[in-house]
Length: 138
Image 1 (spheres, rainbow, N blue to C red):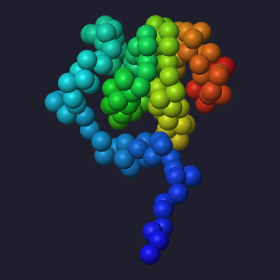
Image 2 (tube, helix red, strand yellow):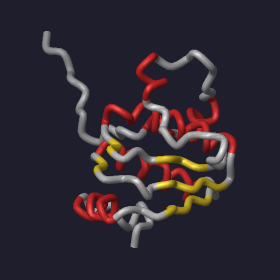
Image 3 (cartoon, rainbow, N blue to C red):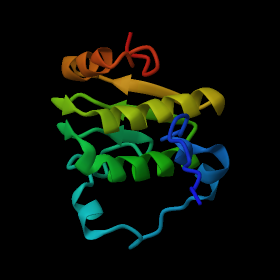
């Protein structure tokens, strides 16, 4: 008897950002892995505003879990988020996808997001993937 396979067409890779799911997630100390602790942005200090999302110089898939966790914490606690992007030299599709999810969530939930000095490299990468409009990098 043949088994019916589920189609991957139409699968939403950003389904984790569903409104109910976002509000049910909380971050607790010690819930991450040892690698997550190493992915905390170097500039994350007392001088950084609690509503700032700091992007690394190289924001790639190895840092995407930490970026997602930071985003979830910020959207649960703040009505405005500033994305500090002045140091970005390279950003990959996984990070851009997470940022797109953040901007789409913000549109639906009256969250204000603003960029702080996005680099030309960030703007070029977003443009290459056709994401400048979604990410409000016009």
